[in-house]
Length: 74
Image (cartoon, rainbow, N blue to C red; front, side, top):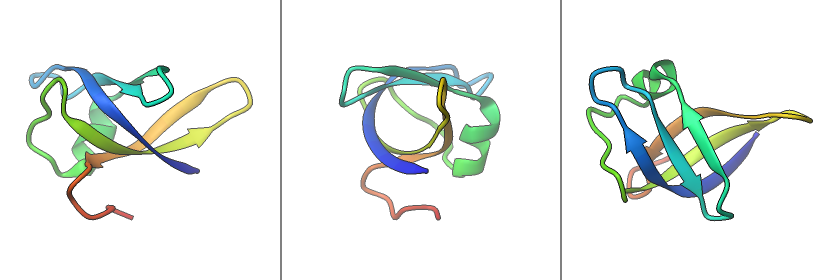
């Protein structure tokens, strides 16, 4: 697991899912479950976030997301 930073690209408050652009330029999506576990109420496009990412050989999956100025949830 790695901790990365990025910027919120999209967020749907109704579903709780969205996407983030990593500082490397790679885009990742996150599910409603990841957002619900964050205990956040809202994310805004352009907002800086910290991500916990599980690196699989062929796939990256986000396991946690939080606002950069908040303490790490783990």
